[in-house]
Image (cartoon, rainbow over all chains, first blue to last red; front, side, top):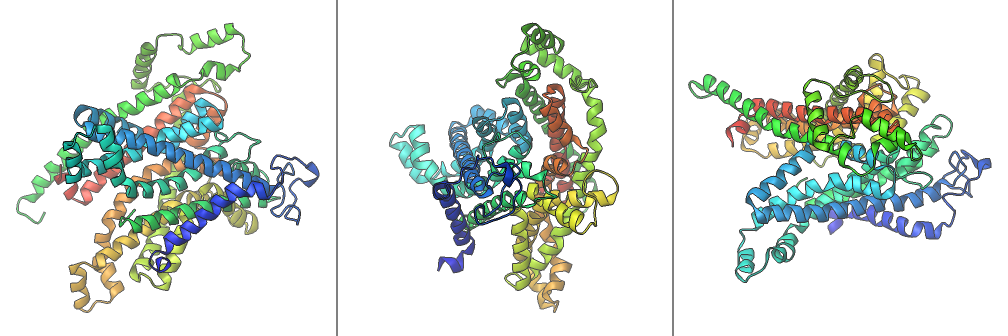
Length: 269
Length: 320
């Protein structure tokens, strides 16, 4: 039934579920060390022992893709969760407080949004230096604004509803009002935006790592695998194919899931 | 224009709208400048230590700090920064010992060229795809075009670039591999940069065409005996374009920064490569200048599309 009416939701859900399984179970099932160097296998093509071949240092590409899945997906999901939490609190507070506080918060959001997102992340990552935590901070610093705007808009429209009025009349404090009564009403559109957000962040993380500003080597991430593979594109294109396909498939999965959720909640993107 | 005397009223309302938008730009531009300054000066991590390395002699650190003016109180640094900026002075590059503004001026045209070419590529791909898909929603052509579009969104440009290089430069030998030159050098970077935007635009055009075809005037056009594709092109397309133009404006600025990765892939001598090189050299004045120019260009492009949009659709400037 659902597959007929909402194929994007089913296909996207399946891809995302499969990716999650790969990230969680992959390194457990395939016990090859993603950091083990074997120069005699440098740039080797696919073989039974190394299904996706080996990179320039003879490290197993499949093992690196599996380990990279944890990094790439993990960073994206943590950043989305962080941005979502900050955005929901800031946007909700702005809408409930109103007046000058609202104005000040939204002007700040406008200024951060006046920067093209990836530029701010690049600048922050450059100044903070390479590292997983710094990467999360750099990406999170740009991510919260979209959620803040969305939550503020939705809360402003929900605020006048009768059930919120009733809760307020019963003496609910602003915090309780926001978390118990208002945010659940925003859950649908937030879920849609967060799903697209994960897809966007997978690309952003890859771009930063590609520029040498993200996950520092030797730890594998799909972005830094693409970067190092690029030098060997003439002799060993499989070095870039594997992470490229992994990124593409993940982004496709989260975009389809987002489309499906949007359709489910009756919203266009 | 339909109402009597509309011409004059229209032009004054356009001018008033332009002035209002320009005035709104001032605090945003000021905020961008301040945030850029704060980024370099307030974020933890000492740029001087980063430039000289962790084991630099304290005297050297102190000397460079003084040379860059970083030993002054923060507010004085900020005032000096604003003063210099107002005079078009972005400081001196540490790694190249040249004024930052000159280095940026040399590279900027290449980035604009790439962004414009990416925009052109996106439009040239999106329109046929969107029209084919929107003319017969649910049909095989629609499925094909939209499948292609979702592929365009999903394949990241940092993979698409190398892929195009393999196919068109190495295997087929049709186009040059890297660098800037004539039109042939521009094709692959433009495709790489424009692919994702093309996919988004095609999807929007399709959606918009489908909505338009449900409208009353389209039913009238069909009732007159026009075929569906003909009615769409003659009557529907114009109206379907409004949301597409809006989206185009929103995304056009993103092409500027999308060009950073594209420039690295294709060794394109633009602002993005200058900035990444500056980051790797820890040349903070140059990084700051590049970030500022990118951000202000982005703001300017967004303003330009706003103004363009208000010229196309009068409802925009009448509201508010």
